[in-house]
Length: 373
Ligand SMILES: Nc1nc2c(ncn2[C@@H]2O[C@H](COP(=O)(O)OP(=O)(O)OP(=O)(O)O)[C@@H](O)[C@H]2O)c(=O)[nH]1
Ligand SMILES: [Mg+2]
Picture (cartoon, rainbow, N blue to C red):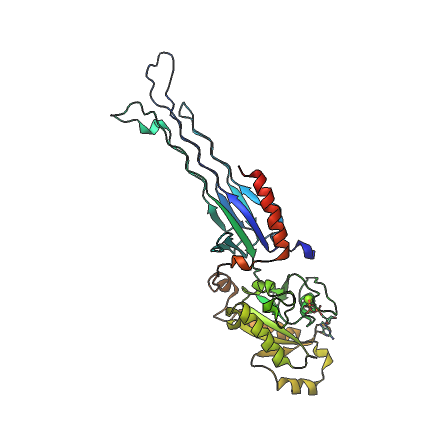
């Protein structure tokens, strides 16, 4: 996946279709005097529906499709002819998409499963034709119902990757290298900080054709919560992971301190991240001998840890075992976390100041002005 193609945030305008009006027609035919009312119903307007699709990994396909309009229902006609229904619009989104109201930031819904559908805006019902209003006291109803109006809304779609394990660490810690050796993912790796600019996902195969999904996100530095480095913008991609794997390199001056800095930054972003299960992987352990390992082990924070090296492969089977065991303990299963274990906060609209989004936003508003009546 090219880096610029990773789109995890879009704002779009949606509108359902209004219902067609019912007809107030009367039957007029030779030799049939006073044919009576025969106006048919208007068709229902189309709805706007969100559908989870596991073939999508990002929101890229929606980036330039900023207006999603379902069709209006057509009006009813004489001869009890019913109006055609307006076609619904289905917005395909990757699993893990969260939907907010763009004006208020209010959380609306989330889509986590392939094929899952949520009706975002319901189409207006078609009005009933006068054929329905004939009664013993009124043989010639000259009215019919109008169709129901459409609904409209600006929404924000935000992707939160659905991975089982999230990698957390400073830049250059060896996160991407780990993902590249345990999965088929080919993230960019280099010996400078912030090599990874967007999240990468990889499927890690485990024994007996079992597997789990690992997410490598850009490195975090002290002060990220105040916007340093790439900030915390990508942390939302580990909000859903049931398990966080902290990666701290063996040559770190103080592993415990580094772990605490990372914890602090996570806490600033969302205190719930602290309650997740944490594991510690000490990367680049090929640089250590047993004596050094023993010395380091005495100074570690109070979490399960493993020394590993992506270069020699040392510790990787143990690391996978640890992850698998944690993922399969009674109280956390990935599904549960994705669905029930996650509380969605509303978005703070005023704090959304992503550069590219602002550009897009103004572009999209211009565009909208032209098309709006
Ligand atoms: N000796 C040794 N070097 C490693 C190991 N794993 C990664 N490295 C090196 O560490 C450097 C950083 O690796 P990356 O995987 O890009 O680090 P990262 O954590 O993804 O960094 P960012 O994307 O910048 O956050 C590279 O030069 C790797 O070759 C390891 O197990 N042993
Ligand atoms: Mg990286």
